[in-house]
Image (cartoon, rainbow, N blue to C red; front, side):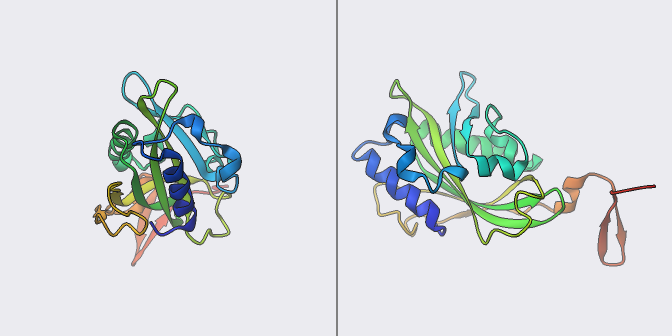
Length: 207
């Protein structure tokens, strides 16, 4: 866990859960974490075991240029990562096991920024493990962030946290490295051509 915002949320979550596997949604006071709220989200499991956004912070929605409430959790990923992301989210919500994801974020303009996502289980009104609270933390936010909407995430690593050992610096469980996509350019479809060692993406005005 490298980003200070994720460490802050994890410490808050740990204090609220006490000796339980996970705190309740009602234990989380927005005023206590007001500085993190723009990038915080809550997802819950539907009866079909699919994970969807119950709410999402304004900055997170701005990254994609659309409202995320009601959207599937996996829809934030590029096509080849949707299934794995959805299964990871369900595992956290249903199994009360926190996870940290390393991400490459690809914009529609073919720009890339690195981020870290923390996923923490919380329980609903009935005490069931059926939801999670998460936080997306972007490293060194570039000038174009929120102006060039994201096309999707690519997960480069996943680490599940062992709550029976001190997890603050995550030395207790290694990160699972994931293979990078063959080419981010493939995410833009077939409107591209090779010129020498460059890849040209066609678009823009044609008049």
